[in-house]
Image 1 (cartoon, rainbow, N blue to C red):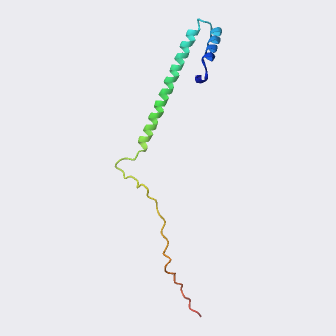
Image 2: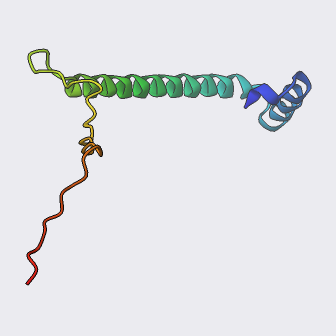
Image 3: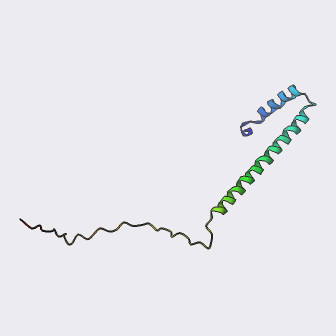
Length: 97
């Protein structure tokens, strides 16, 4: 977000804040803003750690155990091969009446 702001834009924002709040309140506002950003970073880092730990726990829970047999890889059932066409099927002859 601040990556798009240049030096001149930041200077203008600082001057406007100086006019609005005065020179005595600016250090207090800066400290408060710094504390807020620090707390936000702490909270997001804590949340990231909790989520990554939960994902690791889920991965461990879904891993197959070593004593159980492992599934056969590439086991694709094949269809039965058709009968060879070398010998034609015999037709039953019906007795003529």
